[in-house]
Length: 118
Image (tube, rainbow, N blue to C red; front, top):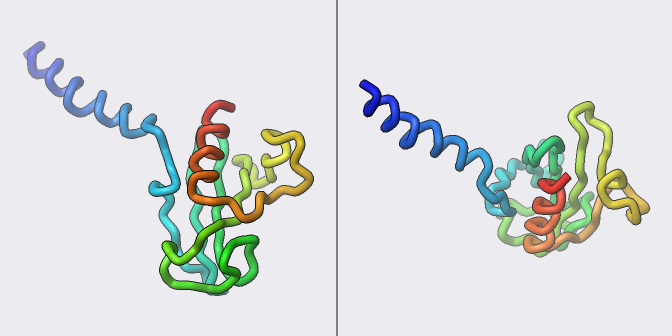
């Protein structure tokens, strides 16, 4: 009986914990097309949410509404508190705006790591 409990813990509980706390990256974002045609993804990162958008009205490149997220080179990002308020300037005190414009995929990976350290 004890052996079965240990096996279950090692094979299920620990693997769930590892998945939950794995290093997140741009590739974990799940983009959806909004009604206005722009691509949008939100990811829970630590105690914040990371909002990433791309399209005609976003600070992204190109500034077009495209179907394939791989056609974008850069993205607009914002860090959001659970209550819906912006947290971007709380984390990056030298920021002058609530959104970060034209962030590359690698930049989003670095942004995620920075948010995780908060």
